[in-house]
Image: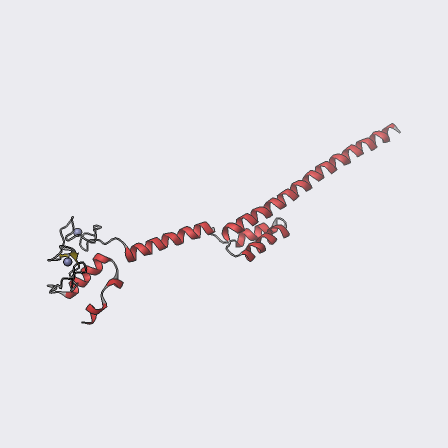
Length: 182
Ligand SMILES: [Zn+2]
Ligand SMILES: [Zn+2]
């Protein structure tokens, strides 16, 4: 009798210990499941712009315990939205710099101001001086835009002047169309 009583107490203790361990394991599994699902949701929000797709990823993360997050990990976008945004800003800045970048000397590529007459580094002639108001003028201009004085362009080589102007402005789009047709 005592033996079986000990045995039943032992088995009761044992089974309760097993059930405690089992409950802890189940709790751990549930916490891990919810934690992974929540991580999928947060990660999807950082990487996906489309609300529907974020919902789909979240449903995958919560709906398929442990496997859903793995599947999401395989198919998630490589870049976060912040990365994409930063890259776009960088590209736009680069493009803007190429199109409307600071003018530079066509010979030594030093950055120059638009009102410089010569390059301060290699003394290349960049602009002509208005005989009336002393403004720095493009060699191609027919009149001074500041004082309206008509100019007689003394440019012998139009091609060279155009090349120099494009190099100084760094922008083909600013080339005056009427000079090309004349
Ligand atoms: Zn120069
Ligand atoms: Zn002038």
